Image (tube, rainbow, N blue to C red; front, top):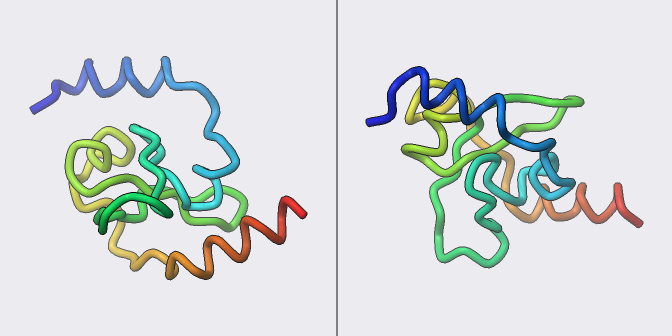
Amino acid sequence: MYSQDSISGHRRGRPEPTPEMRSGLACLICGTDYRSAPTPEAVVVSHRDDRQLLACHGTCARMASGSVDGLDETPLPLAERVRRHQADHS
């Protein structure tokens, strides 16, 4: 697994999340687009502006939140996240 120094270094070097990441449509770490990915298991890893930030279960979640399972919270349905993203960018 990744060392704590490696995880901390990755967090410091990571650019600002994209609009898709802030809307929960893409993984916060690897950028996987959940709208086109074949059944990715996304978990909530953080919140920003009352929105859930998601990451892929496993390594991405661990790098984002320190836990492979993320927070103990169910992500909003994809259709709801897409609707909110479109409303914000219309």
